[in-house]
Length: 348
Image (cartoon, rainbow, N blue to C red; front, side):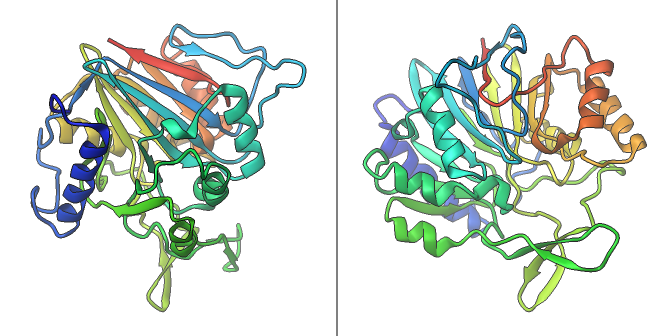
């Protein structure tokens, strides 16, 4: 962020840039040329897992974690959902961002209260993609924090975030309605401004939305059971608008945070490396979408991530039990078991 530029001015600038990117300008509508983005370095990025699928009050800390410990009257809610609060520090300036919102609003509120997370410190909001376990608690979170949120705060998301989605019941052709993120509900709050961005976008100083993730591996396929409504047709969901987050920690390398990685966690990491022109990866955190994956897909994913050699690997949410266990065995020095309420500090 330029000297003398306020956070609000920064956000106005980036929202405006996002509108240009939607029109295909500035970066030619791709943003995928090698080293196309000169990332703002951060002195540190702190990622607090507001909610996730798993909680363990007795799990020991790793060098980069501080876990919440259950106390009388204070406990942690876990669910099939994901929500994170992110804080970046760059040139002495701190910025806040909420990435995804989990599913159960009361559970998410409980966790934010006991973790001491102030929604008012969020300079922007973001959504990884349009599945209900990532946006479910969003409108209620806004409603419960009306007096704290600055009006006009941007909500960043990719294309098709508001599309109707379905999944197939396993072993059948029966469609299960899994909901639709409703833009009208967000607009009705009068608090946030939707900013759909299609390319790499700096959403807070040092925190980037990834842009469209290219699929370069042969084995990472989007699940054929996930569907989206486009026009009048219901088709396979290729998740063109799913966004990961990326940070460049000074002297340490990239931190990649994924919501679900439907287009592949290796594809996601490789995309971030390519867009930034940086090979070194400090940490990979979030949903890897390997739940129910075939063993050979898990093995190839691990092999590729081992070759990338991050200092920390943190599968969460939709990564699946089998894949999580396989990572713990194959990368024991780098592996961290994620739990709801864990605060990760990745610093220079």
